[in-house]
Length: 426
Image 1 (cartoon, rainbow, N blue to C red):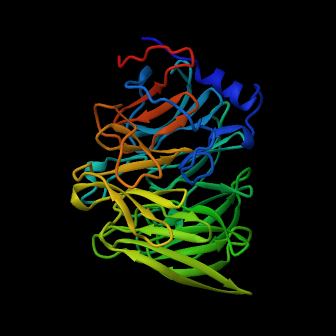
Image 2 (spheres, one colour):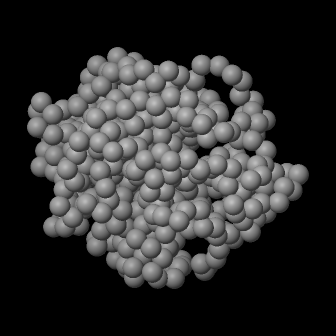
Image 3 (cartoon, rainbow, N blue to C red):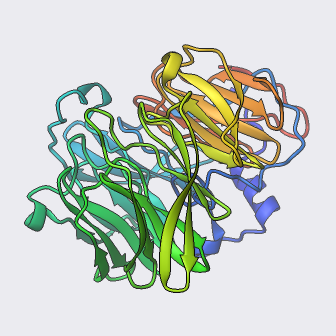
Protein backbone atom coordinates (compact mmCIF):
# COMPACT_ATOMS: atom_id res chain seq x y z
CA UNK A 1 0.00 0.00 0.00
CA UNK A 2 1.71 3.16 -1.16
CA UNK A 3 1.51 6.55 0.56
CA UNK A 4 1.80 9.99 -0.94
CA UNK A 5 3.47 12.93 0.81
CA UNK A 6 2.59 12.71 4.50
CA UNK A 7 -0.11 14.85 6.06
CA UNK A 8 2.40 16.13 8.60
CA UNK A 9 4.89 17.26 5.95
CA UNK A 10 2.26 19.10 3.94
CA UNK A 11 0.90 20.76 7.08
CA UNK A 12 4.38 21.99 7.96
CA UNK A 13 5.04 23.24 4.44
CA UNK A 14 1.73 24.97 3.92
CA UNK A 15 1.20 26.46 7.36
CA UNK A 16 4.73 26.86 8.72
CA UNK A 17 3.68 24.99 11.86
CA UNK A 18 6.35 23.94 14.35
CA UNK A 19 6.10 21.48 17.21
CA UNK A 20 4.61 23.37 20.16
CA UNK A 21 1.71 23.27 22.62
CA UNK A 22 -1.66 23.39 20.92
CA UNK A 23 -2.68 26.93 20.00
CA UNK A 24 -6.08 27.92 18.62
CA UNK A 25 -4.61 29.57 15.54
CA UNK A 26 -2.63 26.41 14.70
CA UNK A 27 -5.56 23.98 14.78
CA UNK A 28 -6.13 22.59 11.29
CA UNK A 29 -9.66 21.22 11.77
CA UNK A 30 -11.25 22.44 15.01
CA UNK A 31 -14.42 20.42 14.57
CA UNK A 32 -17.88 20.47 12.98
CA UNK A 33 -17.98 22.20 9.55
CA UNK A 34 -14.23 22.79 9.42
CA UNK A 35 -11.84 25.68 10.05
CA UNK A 36 -14.47 28.42 10.43
CA UNK A 37 -17.53 26.31 11.26
CA UNK A 38 -19.14 27.31 7.97
CA UNK A 39 -18.08 24.39 5.76
CA UNK A 40 -15.53 26.40 3.76
CA UNK A 41 -11.96 25.07 3.47
CA UNK A 42 -9.82 27.92 2.20
CA UNK A 43 -6.42 26.22 2.48
CA UNK A 44 -7.13 23.63 -0.20
CA UNK A 45 -5.58 24.45 -3.62
CA UNK A 46 -7.97 25.99 -6.13
CA UNK A 47 -6.33 24.19 -9.04
CA UNK A 48 -6.15 20.41 -8.80
CA UNK A 49 -6.43 17.45 -11.14
CA UNK A 50 -8.67 14.97 -9.36
CA UNK A 51 -7.44 11.37 -9.63
CA UNK A 52 -9.56 8.44 -10.76
CA UNK A 53 -8.81 6.70 -7.49
CA UNK A 54 -7.59 7.59 -4.02
CA UNK A 55 -4.82 5.93 -2.04
CA UNK A 56 -5.91 4.29 1.17
CA UNK A 57 -3.13 5.18 3.61
CA UNK A 58 -4.64 3.33 6.57
CA UNK A 59 -7.89 2.13 8.09
CA UNK A 60 -8.49 1.46 11.78
CA UNK A 61 -11.37 0.21 13.91
CA UNK A 62 -12.63 3.06 16.07
CA UNK A 63 -16.24 2.25 17.05
CA UNK A 64 -19.66 3.59 16.11
CA UNK A 65 -21.07 7.12 16.07
CA UNK A 66 -21.74 10.00 13.70
CA UNK A 67 -18.96 12.37 14.78
CA UNK A 68 -15.86 13.10 12.71
CA UNK A 69 -12.40 14.00 14.03
CA UNK A 70 -10.92 17.29 15.08
CA UNK A 71 -7.32 17.68 13.85
CA UNK A 72 -4.19 19.45 15.05
CA UNK A 73 -0.93 18.96 13.08
CA UNK A 74 -0.24 15.21 13.17
CA UNK A 75 -3.05 14.26 15.57
CA UNK A 76 -6.75 13.52 15.13
CA UNK A 77 -9.20 13.38 18.04
CA UNK A 78 -12.26 11.17 17.60
CA UNK A 79 -15.22 10.47 19.92
CA UNK A 80 -17.03 7.15 19.36
CA UNK A 81 -18.87 4.31 21.08
CA UNK A 82 -17.30 0.92 21.83
CA UNK A 83 -19.81 -1.38 23.48
CA UNK A 84 -21.25 0.35 26.53
CA UNK A 85 -18.56 3.04 26.58
CA UNK A 86 -18.02 6.36 24.86
CA UNK A 87 -14.38 6.62 23.86
CA UNK A 88 -12.16 9.60 23.06
CA UNK A 89 -9.07 8.65 21.07
CA UNK A 90 -5.95 10.56 20.05
CA UNK A 91 -4.75 9.14 16.72
CA UNK A 92 -1.40 9.69 15.02
CA UNK A 93 -2.23 10.84 11.47
CA UNK A 94 0.82 9.53 9.59
CA UNK A 95 0.49 5.99 10.99
CA UNK A 96 -3.09 5.61 12.22
CA UNK A 97 -1.81 4.41 15.60
CA UNK A 98 -3.66 5.38 18.76
CA UNK A 99 -1.67 7.67 21.06
CA UNK A 100 -4.11 7.41 23.95
CA UNK A 101 -7.70 6.36 24.61
CA UNK A 102 -10.09 7.44 27.37
CA UNK A 103 -13.34 5.58 28.06
CA UNK A 104 -16.48 6.43 30.00
CA UNK A 105 -19.38 4.06 30.66
CA UNK A 106 -22.38 5.58 28.83
CA UNK A 107 -25.47 3.35 28.88
CA UNK A 108 -28.16 4.77 26.61
CA UNK A 109 -31.61 3.75 25.38
CA UNK A 110 -32.42 5.17 21.95
CA UNK A 111 -35.83 6.81 21.55
CA UNK A 112 -38.42 4.92 19.50
CA UNK A 113 -37.81 5.16 15.77
CA UNK A 114 -34.17 6.09 16.18
CA UNK A 115 -32.76 2.62 16.78
CA UNK A 116 -31.38 2.49 13.24
CA UNK A 117 -29.06 5.40 14.01
CA UNK A 118 -27.51 3.75 17.04
CA UNK A 119 -26.44 5.05 20.44
CA UNK A 120 -24.02 7.73 19.25
CA UNK A 121 -22.17 9.80 20.02
CA UNK A 122 -23.60 11.98 17.26
CA UNK A 123 -21.75 15.26 17.79
CA UNK A 124 -18.27 16.17 16.58
CA UNK A 125 -15.56 16.95 19.15
CA UNK A 126 -14.34 20.55 19.22
CA UNK A 127 -10.63 21.39 19.60
CA UNK A 128 -9.43 24.72 20.98
CA UNK A 129 -6.24 25.92 22.70
CA UNK A 130 -5.07 22.56 23.96
CA UNK A 131 -8.50 21.28 24.98
CA UNK A 132 -10.89 18.81 23.36
CA UNK A 133 -14.58 19.26 24.13
CA UNK A 134 -16.95 16.31 23.66
CA UNK A 135 -20.74 16.21 23.97
CA UNK A 136 -21.93 12.67 24.58
CA UNK A 137 -25.22 11.11 23.48
CA UNK A 138 -26.63 11.43 27.02
CA UNK A 139 -25.95 15.18 27.13
CA UNK A 140 -22.66 15.26 29.04
CA UNK A 141 -20.16 17.99 28.12
CA UNK A 142 -16.54 17.12 28.93
CA UNK A 143 -13.30 19.06 28.59
CA UNK A 144 -10.11 17.03 28.05
CA UNK A 145 -6.43 17.91 27.86
CA UNK A 146 -5.47 17.27 24.23
CA UNK A 147 -1.90 16.22 24.98
CA UNK A 148 -2.52 13.70 27.77
CA UNK A 149 -6.22 12.90 27.59
CA UNK A 150 -6.71 13.96 31.20
CA UNK A 151 -10.26 14.99 32.02
CA UNK A 152 -10.31 18.68 32.99
CA UNK A 153 -13.99 19.16 33.89
CA UNK A 154 -17.44 17.82 33.10
CA UNK A 155 -20.98 19.23 33.11
CA UNK A 156 -24.56 18.12 32.48
CA UNK A 157 -27.95 19.42 33.58
CA UNK A 158 -29.59 16.19 34.71
CA UNK A 159 -30.29 17.81 38.07
CA UNK A 160 -32.71 20.24 36.45
CA UNK A 161 -34.09 18.27 33.49
CA UNK A 162 -33.65 14.66 34.75
CA UNK A 163 -31.88 14.09 31.44
CA UNK A 164 -29.77 16.51 29.37
CA UNK A 165 -30.85 15.43 25.90
CA UNK A 166 -33.85 15.19 23.53
CA UNK A 167 -35.58 11.96 22.54
CA UNK A 168 -32.93 10.60 20.16
CA UNK A 169 -29.94 11.81 22.12
CA UNK A 170 -27.73 14.89 22.15
CA UNK A 171 -26.43 15.68 18.66
CA UNK A 172 -25.19 19.27 18.66
CA UNK A 173 -21.45 19.87 18.39
CA UNK A 174 -19.99 22.24 21.03
CA UNK A 175 -19.28 25.81 19.89
CA UNK A 176 -16.14 27.50 21.27
CA UNK A 177 -15.89 31.30 21.02
CA UNK A 178 -14.62 34.13 23.22
CA UNK A 179 -13.14 31.69 25.78
CA UNK A 180 -16.56 30.06 26.15
CA UNK A 181 -17.87 26.65 25.16
CA UNK A 182 -21.58 26.77 24.34
CA UNK A 183 -24.17 23.98 24.32
CA UNK A 184 -27.87 23.47 25.01
CA UNK A 185 -29.00 20.97 27.63
CA UNK A 186 -32.54 19.68 28.08
CA UNK A 187 -35.36 17.53 26.76
CA UNK A 188 -37.76 18.03 23.87
CA UNK A 189 -40.02 20.01 26.19
CA UNK A 190 -37.56 22.33 27.95
CA UNK A 191 -33.90 23.24 28.02
CA UNK A 192 -31.27 25.91 28.48
CA UNK A 193 -28.51 27.33 26.27
CA UNK A 194 -25.39 27.55 28.45
CA UNK A 195 -21.93 29.04 28.03
CA UNK A 196 -19.09 27.71 30.17
CA UNK A 197 -15.62 29.10 30.76
CA UNK A 198 -13.33 26.91 28.66
CA UNK A 199 -10.65 26.68 31.35
CA UNK A 200 -12.71 26.17 34.51
CA UNK A 201 -16.10 24.91 33.38
CA UNK A 202 -17.78 27.64 35.41
CA UNK A 203 -21.04 28.97 33.98
CA UNK A 204 -20.60 32.25 32.09
CA UNK A 205 -24.28 32.73 31.18
CA UNK A 206 -27.50 30.85 30.49
CA UNK A 207 -30.46 31.65 28.27
CA UNK A 208 -33.99 30.46 27.66
CA UNK A 209 -36.16 27.45 28.38
CA UNK A 210 -36.62 25.93 24.88
CA UNK A 211 -35.65 22.32 24.40
CA UNK A 212 -32.68 21.42 22.21
CA UNK A 213 -32.98 20.30 18.62
CA UNK A 214 -30.49 18.17 16.69
CA UNK A 215 -28.82 21.18 15.04
CA UNK A 216 -25.60 22.85 16.25
CA UNK A 217 -25.07 26.49 17.31
CA UNK A 218 -23.05 28.84 15.10
CA UNK A 219 -21.11 32.07 15.65
CA UNK A 220 -22.08 35.04 13.48
CA UNK A 221 -21.79 38.81 13.40
CA UNK A 222 -25.18 40.27 12.54
CA UNK A 223 -26.02 43.93 12.86
CA UNK A 224 -22.52 44.52 14.19
CA UNK A 225 -23.06 42.18 17.17
CA UNK A 226 -21.21 38.92 17.78
CA UNK A 227 -23.88 36.36 18.51
CA UNK A 228 -24.75 32.72 18.81
CA UNK A 229 -27.25 31.65 16.14
CA UNK A 230 -29.17 28.56 17.18
CA UNK A 231 -32.15 26.57 15.94
CA UNK A 232 -33.67 24.84 18.93
CA UNK A 233 -36.84 22.78 19.38
CA UNK A 234 -39.08 25.84 19.07
CA UNK A 235 -37.32 28.78 17.41
CA UNK A 236 -34.46 30.21 15.40
CA UNK A 237 -32.69 32.65 17.74
CA UNK A 238 -29.74 35.02 18.08
CA UNK A 239 -28.12 35.40 21.52
CA UNK A 240 -25.46 37.95 22.45
CA UNK A 241 -22.14 36.08 22.72
CA UNK A 242 -20.85 38.27 25.56
CA UNK A 243 -23.93 38.32 27.80
CA UNK A 244 -26.31 35.55 26.76
CA UNK A 245 -29.10 38.08 26.24
CA UNK A 246 -31.68 37.29 23.57
CA UNK A 247 -31.34 39.62 20.57
CA UNK A 248 -34.01 38.20 18.27
CA UNK A 249 -36.21 35.16 17.81
CA UNK A 250 -38.31 33.69 15.01
CA UNK A 251 -40.74 30.80 15.71
CA UNK A 252 -39.87 27.66 13.76
CA UNK A 253 -40.96 24.72 15.92
CA UNK A 254 -40.66 20.99 15.52
CA UNK A 255 -43.94 19.87 13.93
CA UNK A 256 -45.39 16.39 14.43
CA UNK A 257 -42.75 13.89 13.39
CA UNK A 258 -40.78 16.50 11.40
CA UNK A 259 -37.73 17.17 13.54
CA UNK A 260 -35.52 20.26 13.67
CA UNK A 261 -32.22 18.73 12.56
CA UNK A 262 -30.04 20.51 9.94
CA UNK A 263 -27.68 23.23 11.14
CA UNK A 264 -28.56 26.55 9.43
CA UNK A 265 -26.09 28.34 7.13
CA UNK A 266 -25.23 31.98 7.86
CA UNK A 267 -23.91 34.29 5.14
CA UNK A 268 -23.80 38.09 4.88
CA UNK A 269 -26.48 38.93 7.44
CA UNK A 270 -28.82 36.20 6.21
CA UNK A 271 -29.68 32.77 7.60
CA UNK A 272 -30.65 29.82 5.41
CA UNK A 273 -32.77 27.23 7.19
CA UNK A 274 -34.01 23.94 5.78
CA UNK A 275 -36.58 21.79 7.56
CA UNK A 276 -37.92 18.28 7.18
CA UNK A 277 -41.01 18.40 4.92
CA UNK A 278 -41.08 22.20 5.45
CA UNK A 279 -39.00 23.56 2.59
CA UNK A 280 -35.99 25.90 2.55
CA UNK A 281 -36.14 29.44 3.93
CA UNK A 282 -34.09 32.63 4.00
CA UNK A 283 -34.32 34.90 7.06
CA UNK A 284 -32.67 38.25 7.72
CA UNK A 285 -32.41 39.52 11.31
CA UNK A 286 -32.40 43.33 11.24
CA UNK A 287 -31.25 45.77 13.92
CA UNK A 288 -32.74 49.21 14.48
CA UNK A 289 -30.94 50.68 17.48
CA UNK A 290 -31.66 48.38 20.40
CA UNK A 291 -34.60 46.71 18.62
CA UNK A 292 -34.37 43.62 16.41
CA UNK A 293 -36.77 42.09 13.93
CA UNK A 294 -36.60 39.11 11.57
CA UNK A 295 -37.69 39.36 7.94
CA UNK A 296 -38.32 36.35 5.73
CA UNK A 297 -36.71 36.96 2.33
CA UNK A 298 -37.92 33.86 0.50
CA UNK A 299 -39.22 30.31 0.79
CA UNK A 300 -38.51 27.42 -1.58
CA UNK A 301 -41.02 24.57 -1.19
CA UNK A 302 -39.75 22.21 -3.90
CA UNK A 303 -36.84 21.00 -1.78
CA UNK A 304 -36.48 20.29 1.95
CA UNK A 305 -33.66 19.31 4.29
CA UNK A 306 -34.13 16.33 6.60
CA UNK A 307 -30.85 15.80 8.50
CA UNK A 308 -28.34 17.23 6.02
CA UNK A 309 -26.84 20.68 6.63
CA UNK A 310 -26.26 22.83 3.51
CA UNK A 311 -23.22 25.04 2.82
CA UNK A 312 -22.67 28.34 1.01
CA UNK A 313 -20.29 28.77 -1.91
CA UNK A 314 -20.19 32.10 -3.72
CA UNK A 315 -23.75 33.19 -4.44
CA UNK A 316 -25.26 29.72 -4.07
CA UNK A 317 -26.32 27.24 -1.42
CA UNK A 318 -25.55 23.53 -1.91
CA UNK A 319 -27.47 20.82 -0.12
CA UNK A 320 -29.36 17.53 -0.06
CA UNK A 321 -33.16 17.41 -0.22
CA UNK A 322 -34.90 14.36 1.20
CA UNK A 323 -37.54 14.54 -1.55
CA UNK A 324 -37.27 12.00 -4.41
CA UNK A 325 -35.47 9.61 -2.02
CA UNK A 326 -32.53 12.00 -1.74
CA UNK A 327 -31.41 14.61 -4.27
CA UNK A 328 -28.46 16.99 -4.38
CA UNK A 329 -29.31 20.59 -5.29
CA UNK A 330 -28.09 24.16 -5.51
CA UNK A 331 -30.14 27.35 -5.19
CA UNK A 332 -29.45 31.06 -5.61
CA UNK A 333 -28.86 32.76 -2.27
CA UNK A 334 -30.60 35.95 -3.34
CA UNK A 335 -33.86 34.44 -4.57
CA UNK A 336 -34.07 30.76 -3.62
CA UNK A 337 -34.36 29.82 -7.30
CA UNK A 338 -33.27 26.25 -7.94
CA UNK A 339 -30.28 26.25 -10.30
CA UNK A 340 -30.03 22.49 -10.63
CA UNK A 341 -31.06 19.23 -9.03
CA UNK A 342 -29.12 16.00 -9.31
CA UNK A 343 -30.55 12.53 -9.91
CA UNK A 344 -33.08 11.16 -7.43
CA UNK A 345 -32.42 8.22 -5.10
CA UNK A 346 -29.04 9.67 -4.20
CA UNK A 347 -29.27 8.40 -0.63
CA UNK A 348 -30.74 9.21 2.77
CA UNK A 349 -28.14 11.72 3.85
CA UNK A 350 -25.23 13.83 2.63
CA UNK A 351 -22.67 16.09 4.26
CA UNK A 352 -21.08 19.04 2.46
CA UNK A 353 -17.84 21.03 2.47
CA UNK A 354 -16.81 23.86 0.14
CA UNK A 355 -13.43 24.28 -1.55
CA UNK A 356 -12.31 27.32 -3.60
CA UNK A 357 -13.77 25.90 -6.84
CA UNK A 358 -15.59 22.77 -5.76
CA UNK A 359 -18.13 21.26 -3.39
CA UNK A 360 -17.27 17.99 -1.67
CA UNK A 361 -20.21 15.84 -0.59
CA UNK A 362 -20.16 12.51 1.23
CA UNK A 363 -23.32 10.44 0.78
CA UNK A 364 -24.42 7.92 3.38
CA UNK A 365 -23.86 5.25 0.71
CA UNK A 366 -20.09 5.71 1.08
CA UNK A 367 -19.66 7.75 -2.12
CA UNK A 368 -17.48 10.86 -1.91
CA UNK A 369 -18.25 13.22 -4.78
CA UNK A 370 -16.56 16.43 -5.97
CA UNK A 371 -18.86 18.87 -7.77
CA UNK A 372 -17.62 21.90 -9.73
CA UNK A 373 -19.19 25.15 -8.57
CA UNK A 374 -20.79 27.81 -10.74
CA UNK A 375 -22.34 25.34 -13.20
CA UNK A 376 -25.94 25.51 -14.42
CA UNK A 377 -26.46 21.78 -14.23
CA UNK A 378 -25.39 18.88 -12.05
CA UNK A 379 -21.83 17.75 -12.84
CA UNK A 380 -19.22 15.58 -11.13
CA UNK A 381 -15.52 16.35 -11.26
CA UNK A 382 -14.71 13.15 -9.34
CA UNK A 383 -16.45 10.34 -7.48
CA UNK A 384 -14.95 7.64 -5.26
CA UNK A 385 -16.30 4.80 -3.14
CA UNK A 386 -14.60 5.48 0.20
CA UNK A 387 -16.53 3.10 2.45
CA UNK A 388 -18.31 -0.21 2.19
CA UNK A 389 -20.71 0.66 5.01
CA UNK A 390 -22.83 3.70 5.92
CA UNK A 391 -21.14 7.10 6.25
CA UNK A 392 -23.20 9.55 8.30
CA UNK A 393 -20.25 11.45 9.77
CA UNK A 394 -18.93 14.51 7.91
CA UNK A 395 -15.57 14.03 6.14
CA UNK A 396 -12.48 15.97 7.15
CA UNK A 397 -10.45 17.62 4.38
CA UNK A 398 -6.69 17.66 4.91
CA UNK A 399 -4.12 19.33 2.65
CA UNK A 400 -3.33 15.86 1.28
CA UNK A 401 -6.64 14.06 1.33
CA UNK A 402 -9.67 13.05 3.37
CA UNK A 403 -10.54 11.42 6.69
CA UNK A 404 -13.72 9.35 6.42
CA UNK A 405 -15.57 7.80 9.36
CA UNK A 406 -17.95 4.97 8.44
CA UNK A 407 -20.00 2.63 10.65
CA UNK A 408 -17.04 1.31 12.64
CA UNK A 409 -13.78 2.49 11.04
CA UNK A 410 -11.78 5.63 10.29
CA UNK A 411 -9.87 5.79 7.00
CA UNK A 412 -7.25 8.20 5.71
CA UNK A 413 -7.58 8.58 1.95
CA UNK A 414 -4.65 10.35 0.30
CA UNK A 415 -4.48 12.28 -2.94
CA UNK A 416 -1.49 11.60 -5.23
CA UNK A 417 1.64 13.56 -4.39
CA UNK A 418 3.12 16.27 -6.60
CA UNK A 419 5.61 13.69 -7.84
CA UNK A 420 2.75 11.84 -9.47
CA UNK A 421 2.56 8.75 -7.30
CA UNK A 422 0.12 6.36 -8.85
CA UNK A 423 -2.96 5.97 -6.65
CA UNK A 424 -4.40 2.60 -5.82
CA UNK A 425 -7.62 1.52 -4.17
CA UNK A 426 -6.22 -1.12 -1.88
